[in-house]
Length: 265
Image 1 (cartoon, one colour):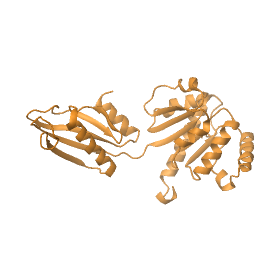
Image 2: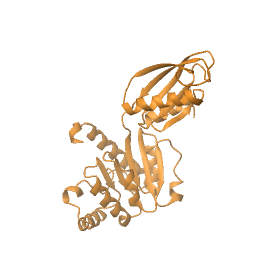
Image 3: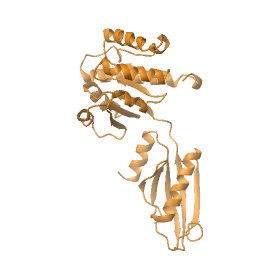
C-alpha cells in the first residue's frame, strides 16, 4: 500500500499517527521535497524521509507529539550538521500533521465458525476493529485478509480475554457452552460493565449457562449483562442471516451507548 492508503487505514482503525512531509530542502540533504512518512507510537510504518539520522530525528519528534496527545500542525527546520550531527551541510524543513481519530469501535469475537465467518464479512466493511479468537488455525485462515480484522490463534479460548477492554463489544460464538463458560466467567470478573456481551445459542443454553456461572460465583447483577440468544429476532438460522441480525443488534447497542453521558459509559 502507498502512504495515502496507510494513512486512511490507520485513521479508519482508530490508530493515532503523525504524517511527516518534507516541505523544503536546501543544500546537500538525503531526502527530497514532498516526501512523506507515517509514524505511529511504534515507529515508522510507511514512507521515507531519506533515512539516516535526520529520519530518526523526525520519527522521534513524531512519537513525542503522539505521546503528548497534541492535535496541531508543527513545523521544524533542522540544519543537518548543527542539529543532527550529520556531515551534510544542508537544511530540511518538515511539517508534522497529527491525526488523532476517535477510538475505533472494538469488537472481539470468540470463535471462528460458520456464523463468525459470515459476521466478519459484514463487519469488515464497517468502521470498526475486529479481533477473532479461536483454537483452530484452519478456521482462522478462512477469513479474508481485511485491514480491520485480526485473527488470534490460542491454545485455550480464555486466553483471548486479554484482548478485551472495558469498552469492547464481545461475542461468544465458540463451539458450545463448555467453551463459552470459562470465557464468560473471566470476562465478567474482569469487566463488570461491558457495553455488549452476546452469546450465540438458545433459551435452553442460556438457562444452562446462567446456572453454571452462578456456580462459579457470579452475581445476578453481572449476569444481567449477558445477551443470549444474541441477535435481533429476525431472519432464519442461516449463518448469513444470523450475521445480519447480530450486526443490527451491535449497531443498535452502539448507538444507545453513544447517547449515554460519559460518566455512565
